[in-house]
Length: 172
Image (tube, rainbow, N blue to C red; front, side, top):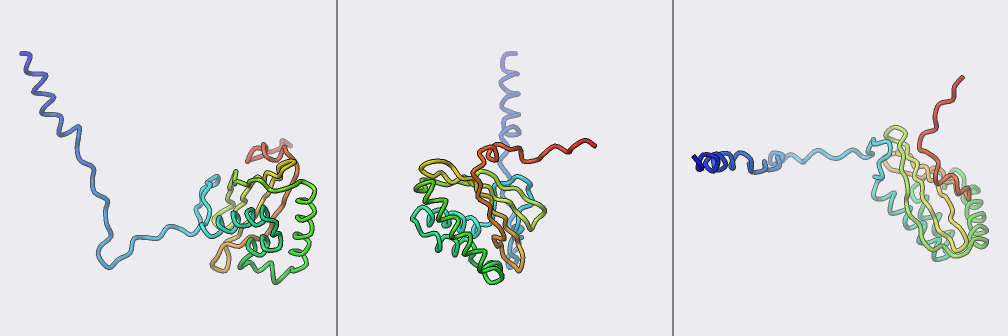
């Protein structure tokens, strides 16, 4: 009688510890389906690797005091550079003035990414300077076969770091 539970455990063990199914491989000669160029997740921290690299290089160059090179890297491949060269010059001047006032860039990190459809992303970063943090928003657009930075907005408003992603709809 005491053997019945033991035998039942032995008989059910192979069922409970079934081996994992191997991953399905595409047939020979057919590549696996590609991931979409732009993840559609509304709050996904995923962004295109090239775009992420440009943003990280932007902050590194600012930390090294290379403001012009930072903007050249950030807007690399963007049509904005050719269409509005004065805007880039203004960004360089204002950023240089801000960094002179706020001190050395110590670190920077991405804190939020939001999507509006599959072609527009808002990338929110914090840049920590010696005296205080700066809130950076980058707007990236997927057009002409690549991700481009189409706008950037630095801000000193500390509340903007803590604002909810979605603002409640106002009552009429």
